[in-house]
Image 1 (cartoon, rainbow, N blue to C red):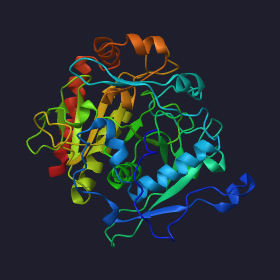
Image 2 (image 1 turned 90 degrees about the vertical axis):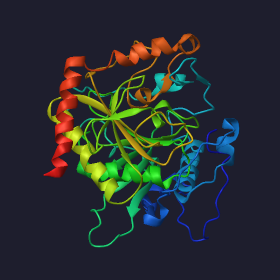
Image 3 (image 1 turned 180 degrees about the vertical axis):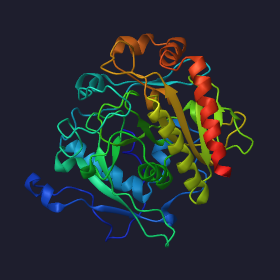
Length: 391
């Protein structure tokens, strides 16, 4: 398992417990514990993959955030709150230049909840459909609670961390802001900030966060981000990019498997807030024009030429505009959403897993991208939006 062999970092004996009481009748009475964090908990230092990939996970320490998520998630697994028991997933790096990480996850393909009937990228929230107010109390791990950081601090978002009952990988969670407000699946600055901070709270280079828009394979129209651990580097961490504006506020990732827009920050502070503003302006533009999109957050290298996976000195946010996909699509070896565009391929059947090639994976992904003429129009529009920083 991905996190079982992590070394625990000693914590104060009064550290909040994120475990459920033994009796399920007491779960709701317990309330949701707060994971309280501050600027000091955000790791600016460079986090690196181990040179010995087989022992990378075994030798990494847990941050407070990793420890809270790990212990609470594992307990829910033992209590049977997931749709299936996630075991070690068979994993292979597909031969070729991209470096796809393919994993066989048959149970997710069979057991996951049927996606909702989505007709529009801007579809309104429907309280009659499944949403995260209808989950069992034990599925909530904790609530993210930022310490006040002075009068100029951004308004705190009430973000609940839930288990994903159909997990992609160990530690797969959902970040859901203000569940009772019934927000539709449209990215907002507050939840993006918490998602970025979650990556900075982790000491593991493979903790990633992402977002699928409606039409971009989001299966529930209730605002949420995904977060999960993957013990492998991904192509997007160091893929080369070219600046699209003179000040480098937005870059283009041109490498396979799919071109995407790259935003980068070295860590918390004003640069992080500027990045959040730019990304949300970009996703607002796409949503307003019914253009589906996926977003992926990972530690990674600064923009520019190809970097090795050992250079994880900042945070990369990659945004892909893509063709809208409404309804259930189960014809391919994998569905194309946030993790697949980043190079992580959860494959649904043993036959596809054994026969999948890099060329087939690239073809499946690129079939979901916008036609080139429309992609060029989107690029020009987003570059113009970024220029508004100067106004």
